[in-house]
Image (cartoon, rainbow, N blue to C red):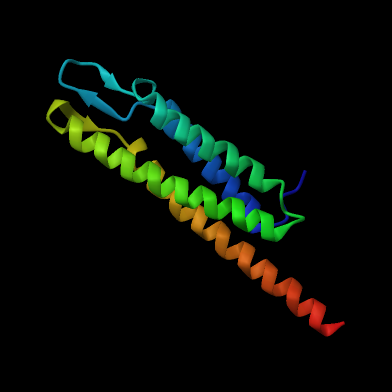
Length: 134
């Protein structure tokens, strides 16, 4: 299998990053325990949904309009995930010794998904230009 479009590669990387975010601990707490996604089941469900939608959108390359819609939904859910994560961080601030790297993965997923969206729009413009030539 060869990935022929940049947006497919971006969406695959974004889904891997959101998977890592769901798996890795977010912070180390004062009582030597770790803060993980399992402690917040709704937040975990939201991020798993984002990952599943990102994987599904990879295979929608034949219908660019639908792929673009699914990627927009993923970006909106990702913004909701970032806001929810910030609220969790705000509520847990006094108990946390150190925040780990996975906290930044959600922001990276948003940036990568935005890049994928830009490539989808570019492909759409390219296909429209070929239609004008014929």
